[in-house]
Length: 447
Image (cartoon, rainbow, N blue to C red; front, side, top):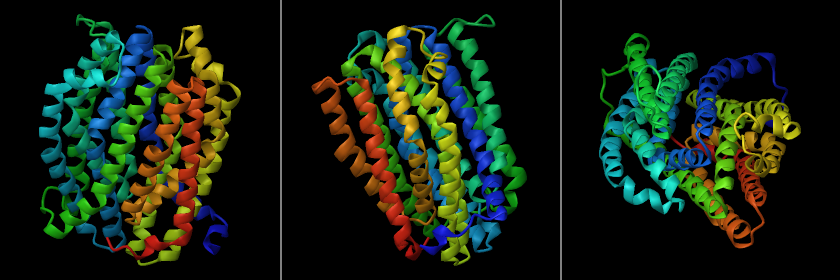
């Protein structure tokens, strides 16, 4: 525990920020894109906004498992770098790209075919269903590209090349904004596809991102084994051992968020529209925590590759404390000026009113949630994926979702009570990760 209380030196702070800020910058472009999407679709009306919100989480649920490839690639690449095996760092990336194709192609095809039968289970409003199905299908077309994007993300962050990740995402998301403007509203002579156009723009931009990553990998990662060495059985087994629990965790989380939207949809369409905006703002708010967490994944993995457990433990605390302080300061905007933030996205007075208190509840607890995100990613960097999965799944499904259904549709306590339950479960999750990191059982895991 003594490592927790050592001063964060200027050198370590600089190392953290050098790795984390490009990750945050790249991810910020994603969340700016989400907010621009929300603002654009919000001009069409509440049903369109609700359809995109539900369709986005249905897509998240469908693609969540394949996102787990990023954790496996990053943990292995960082560990190999720490071990000095630089020529092998891209071999896990090759495995991630292969698994993305093998998993995503048949799975996305199946879901596209049956989307019209599955989507009505998620929401009752016929208009939202009508708008949501084509949007979801457009997003599902890009599942294989999404899996490849996440594999590349894990590699670039694992080998301290997060700037590649940042600049690719920025280009990709600027393209997405332009494509959405064209396809949603029918610019440049094209028809107006409405909410479906947002899905089409996102899919095209995702494939553009893959193309950019491949070109850069031939320049920067060819000497590290990119598309030169097929991963052996041991590497594939290690990747699956790390990726599958994270993929299951992501799937349960995404499914849980979709169930949450179903619960909120049973309260009302206005509440569902308000929650769509709240979730996008939440994703912006947790962005630094995720970015710092990814940096911690690499720093912890590299330290363990050098067999320096004490340094690995200290990295987790250093990154977590720095991130919590910075995010806590940023969250004051949402806590003190909720109407200002929400006014950009919600134009109907009742929908705006519904979202005010939930936003303030989220903002007040954001610093603590950020610490949890960093320590969760630190545990993933150490290979403790199974216990992370157990904690997140049990708290979300065993506590939060039943409570949300009880206080929302059953007791009728309103949208704010549902978001208060969300903050409560996330706070308990952070407490669990603090205890796990302090105990240090993760140090004995072999990757």
